[in-house]
Image (cartoon, rainbow, N blue to C red):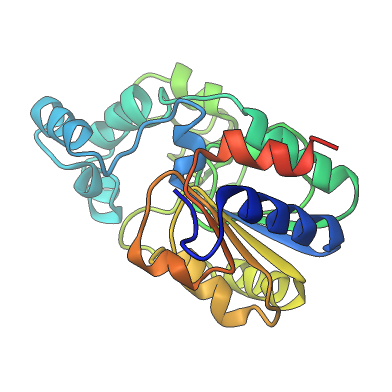
Length: 252
């Protein structure tokens, strides 16, 4: 479905005009983008019920600071069996974003996803609000470890040099987003000449934060699922991002 004020063809044409003329684009990536790559949606009721049945805790409870501190063994069992095992690969959406980056017109990707797909395709400026599963560190010496080290460890992973526990590089429930990361995101949005919202909606706290700092007037939303707040965008296209964004960027 599309913006009621424009036909699908008109929305596509207008969105393409905006992206073609923009030189400081900021892309906001929500969970819908990685779901189209094969990732799980941990807000899906079926996923929640399965996890609660298996681990006797909700995903939110397990992925909290309190559970990590008190039950590190159970935390890492879940973290390795579920969270890190939920892998996916970049699709056409990320190829389109990479093209904008190669052209020097993508100022930043801001994301709440932790899969690291933006960096995997080589996008230079990625602001990961919730951190990354690809960055883990020793709580004592600060040495960093990749995902495979965590997956291959037995029980609670520890540093191979000082034998202290390793901290996951993602934001856990109960933690605030780092101030320097929020400042970086705010600055990128202030300097943008176009915002493109992908795989989420205008109720998303990341999107609301970005719009509050955006000074421009070119706002595109592409997402499969509708939300009543989406009408605030200049261009709204309710289709899969991987089907739409490449047509706007790659098809010349």
